[in-house]
Length: 334
Image (tube, rainbow, N blue to C red; front, side, top):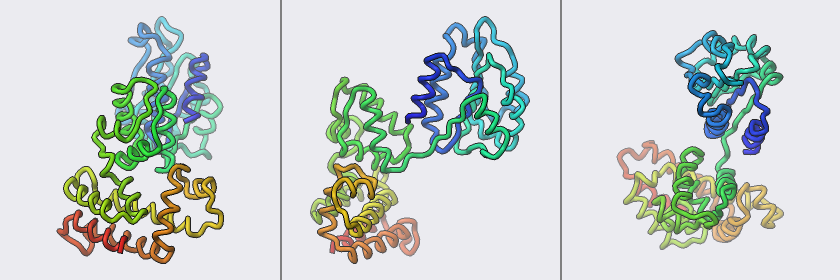
């Protein structure tokens, strides 16, 4: 994320602010900034007396202000990191007096996850003048694969679009979880490696042949044999392939296919832009559109909604999810 890089670059140049209020929906980016400050603002020999980690549930605003007003010992600055600061949400506005006149030698970092300050109130305005307010937003599913590519590229690795998409469809949009898997890959693969689906399968345990990406592609191509093989694999490995994920991804695919049918301009750049997909995957929609007219796609979307309810036990209690998936596949491909 560009704003993370901007904050880190400023700190490297010595432009360290007295308050960093890190807030919003994506904890991964909050942790990135907070961890960088924790690791780099003070030298190791300075941290013992001048760096502390507090937790929002254990302290009050008065406690924070009291600690923040202390002077550092044998160092230019002290660092105070408040984790789970959202637990102070009911009283957070009481920090306004300190925020208007913060201690210059203190770096106060508040990790305010899943919540955000009200921009209309005094605290937001005060910190905006004296410190840094960093608001994070969750990446949409179609943005995560691109984030994976950039993250690997920044460390001198490449990753194929298919491999990145397989990771997203298996791990979801939890960036911390994905980052852990990328770290594993970087440990076993030398710099400069182009990470392929085969490497993903060998080192992470995600099948390159039996996954939701391949199922979606087989259905789009009307490759009934391959689609049934994948569904059978899912039935035998339900914990690794939950029905709710499969139905959700298929619903997203056919909803996008409806959009595709409605486009006047079906050029690759325009389709990629409108559907918010990597241009690499545009041909999948072109092929699927030939196999599934708009009326059929509408019927499939309806069947997917029904399958989603059944998967949650509505009207299909005690029916194995593998059987529900097989029934759904028949409805889609007939």
